[in-house]
Image (tube, rainbow, N blue to C red):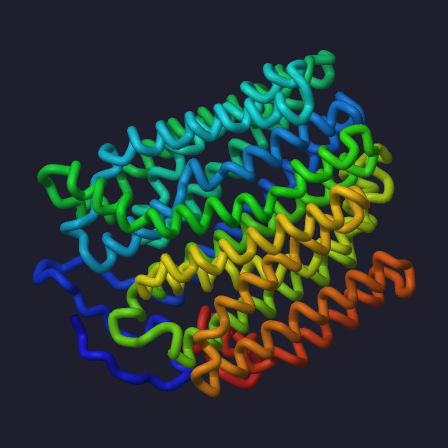
Length: 505
């Protein structure tokens, strides 16, 4: 291993040279430029997917109505709720091993039985919880719409190898094509007055299965497969599972506190029409989670490489990166506020009028999600997954207590604030080790300020005190003012040409 050394705070993440742990060459080190290409391509493809999801939601709302959408939305949220079971932190652990210890990384084929077993468990839970919350009449819908977790597990099995090669944009592009195909099939099914379960197969589970078949080829041809070390796989798989256990536990807790509202709002009043509004609004949080995962996924190989030569939790460069990404998330939160009315009108098709209020109340989750994903990978990279597990246990306790005190008695209204407030508690705890250094203290205070800006703007817009657009514009301007230096550094670090200077290498 390389000898730890310090580097200038303004240096890009790729500036620390890769020091192979094995005498054999491991291929080129991950670079910031590669991360930029990956993120830009992924975001471009994701925009296509988001548009397809929005159009699909509009089609489903018109086809099955608000009452039917409550069942549909419940299943979708439970699929997201149990996403941890499809990949309970296996991918980041495999990425770390491929970059730092390839001889301890299992082969993709060795992980398939584990992935499918976890996905089957997730499907059983989706069906069981849906039937428990919404009645036995939803069982077929839950099986067919929730069944997408099985091919999704095979898709995620390719992720670590593509991530190391900074080729996740290829997966995202194929996902966009699958989403467009699903949209076309969904529209055809709606024109033929197909039932909700048939729409589920046409629009979601069928295209996801096709995508899983296409990803087999991507996994076969990606360059990092050259790092596969022949030999017995059982001990390697067992080692991954042992290492992933704390992170898996943390993801279980995250899933619980992020989606626990589904159980509480249904328990408060399963016939409350506001449930459909909140489920609709939360779909945009789901898309933010995808964006956060894209950004954090691009950063993970860089963090793993950087950790060879720097203590990430005390590293000024890592602090600046987290602040810059939180600022990007805050701008996305401002965009949620600005476009909340348009999204509700266009996507909601007049079926979920009033959902814009919940979109605005959920907006503070945007900077928190980007911060949370990156901090989680920092903790994984430095071997402190157990610490992250404990932090999420605190979050779950806060979340359940708040829902029990407020949501059960007041219904949907408090759920948005509890959702992002829980994430804030977890991140505040995760930032505590950063307070030991001046750059870490500055980073923590800046992140909290960014969240506060979005929260104030969202509350004012939701209450009608200020229009959505003025609140969003003021929020975005203040975000840029507060985090100008980290944002400029990030832009240069990923090669964005800016006036007055060349991009950073």
